[in-house]
Length: 124
Image: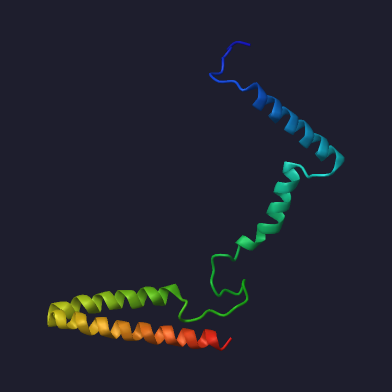
C-alpha cells in the first residue's frame, strides 16, 4: 500500500467480535433465516412508501374523511390575526379596559370550547 496509516487505538477483541458477527449474519442470510439489508430496505419502502403520499393533507380525499372547520389551519390563523389586531386597536382607542374585556371574552370562549369538547368526548 502507498499509505500505511496506523490507528491510534486498536481493539483486537472488538475486531474479532465484529468479524464473527458479520460471518454469522452472512451464514444466516445464506440459510434464509434472516433477510439481507437490501430485502429489508425494499420491504420497508414497499410497505411505508405509499402511505407518505397523503400523510400531510388533513381531510383530503386521499385519507377519506371530511375536513372539519375547526381543524382548518387557515381559519385558525385568521382568527389569531383578527384577535391580535383587535387587541392592538382596542388598546390604542380604549386603553387597558379593552385588554380586560378581551381577556374575559377569551376566557369565556376557552371555557365554552373546553366544555363542548368534554361533552362530546363523554358521549362516546
